[in-house]
Image (cartoon, rainbow, N blue to C red; front, side, top):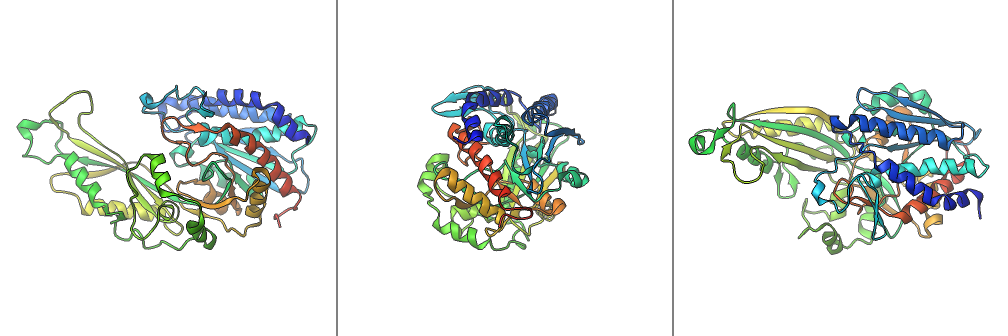
Length: 463
């Protein structure tokens, strides 16, 4: 057996023990109370990367105004391409806790799956390239490409400081190609190559009514209820499945030809999809199928709508405030700041009488990303996946957002190929998030195979 693959096979049980250690760190980046846990995760990753390199990978922790990032560099491959590996170590909040079948930060194997918050998004997949690099050294070889590693801790809050960090560290991060361990494959039965990821624009709104909470019997009917007003505002944002914000679709462009062709040829069964997510029927913008709505059309979603009494039982209160959290998923040519401006203008124009509006929080956004199916890097990844999985990869899009891809293109002038071995059905961001052990094993092989394939094709391209 190939020496590197033999190491990967022999060390499999140890790798899962280390993944369990990693998942046990509750690195929730959005919660200030978890800031120290995020730093513990940063320390864990930096130590693990240094150990993987056997002295050949230089590791640094780069500070940002909020959460740090981990950087590593290896230059032992001479004139071979330099590959930047990206991933993120922060995770979503685990709530609601009572919906988990096992503790969210205890990696639990059940029914052939590994359950835990962050195991799919993105801890298992970002650990793979670290272990792959280590396997070369432990086999008495060296990685066949020069490597840069960048693992951030703010992806789940929109990577607010990563753009400035990358810009300020352009020389250290200089590379020929970026490989993102974040993202995910479309289905468990086959590999896939992602050509597009949607962008993001987000904002938070508070609807203000009376100066304080009021008795709903004494004051109801006499002053505006902010919750009612918030519901009116939310209802105004859509006309059926189409976003009703003026100018929202002005800059929407047609998708890549390969991706457009894939929308009609992929083995997608809508009834199976609806059963898997527990939805009674499909819904969305008329004139487009489910995959098109999720991959190549923009959306506006209300992620939170709350206010007033939310405890057990009844409290007859007319609340003083109501709150709305909104995110929009964007397609190429849509500018996040422009979309936020248009949504705010819409909300202000449709403000019901008797209330005022304010916009809080740090507006965050990321532009959409697309890479050509003809890219030599994409072809190299597709060939590697076919060799490892025994089947050609599907060509797909991604409904979610990976902000760093656009950042790498702008700051470093390189394309990003998504190379994650999570799959779309693994309940990321939801209770009972899980990862497939088989994908962990195949992912290790695929990282080794891709680096070898890139090294065989010379500097500056895989063609």
